[in-house]
Amino acid sequence: MKIAVLTGAGVSAESGLKTFRDSNGLWEGHDVMQVASPEGFARNPELVLDFYNQRRRQLLEVSPNDAHIAIADLEKNHEVVVITQNVDDLHERAGSSHVIHLHGELLKVRSTFDESLVLDWRDDLNLGDFCEHNHQLRPHIVWFGEMVPMMEVATQEVSNADAVLVVGTSMQVYPAAGLIQYAPDEASLYFVDPNPSIAASNRMTVFAENATSGVPKVVDLLTSE
Image (tube, rainbow, N blue to C red; front, side, top):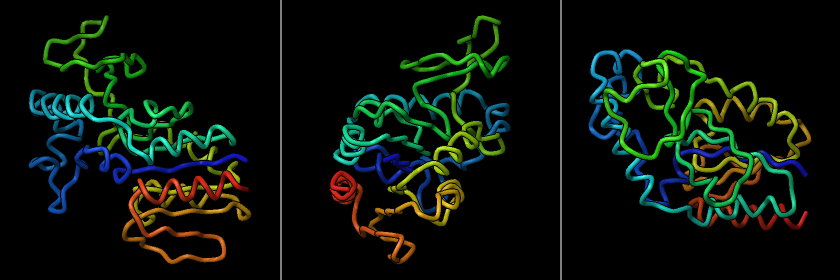
C-alpha cells in the first residue's frame, strides 16, 4: 500500500518546538513579513538571520515524538511518503526515508546568487557567510511571495496514494487542503487533529486528539490492512 502523510506544525509542537505563528498573527513577536519575506530580508537581513538562528538552535535541542516515530514505523509494511509543511528534520531523525519539505529546511542554507546551491548548515548563519560565488547565504526557507518548488512533486505523490493521513495541520488551509483534493476517489483518508475542522464520513476517519496519541492509532489501522 502507498501512503501519503501530510504533516504540519501540530506534529512538531509536541516535541517542544514553538509553532511559528501565534494566535495574534505574529511570529515570535515579529510581523510575518519582517522575517519571512524577500522584502524583509532585503530590508533587515540581520533580523531575519537572527530569527532563523534562534529557530535552528531550538531545533537541535528537541527530539522526535511518538507521532514522528509511528509515521516512520509505517515504512516497515508500506511505501510511505511524508509531505510536510514543517522546516525541521524530526521526521528524518525518527527514521522516515522519503520526506518532501514544502516550505524548505531549517538545517540548510542556500546562495542568494544561485538558489540551486544548497548547503547543510547547523550553526548560526551570519552576515558575511558567503557561498562559493561570494554572495550572501540565506535560510533555505520558502518565504511568503516565493514559489513552492516541491508542490508539483507532492501533488503527484498524493494522486498515486492508496491512503492519505493528514496530521497537525488544518484541512482548511493551503497547502494541505489543496493537496488532499488530488487523492484518488478510492483512497482512504485519515485526519488527526484535537479540534477537527471536518466530520467523519464513509471515506474519512477522524481522530479528535493530539498527534502523539492519534497517529499510532491510525498506524495500527493501516498496518492491519
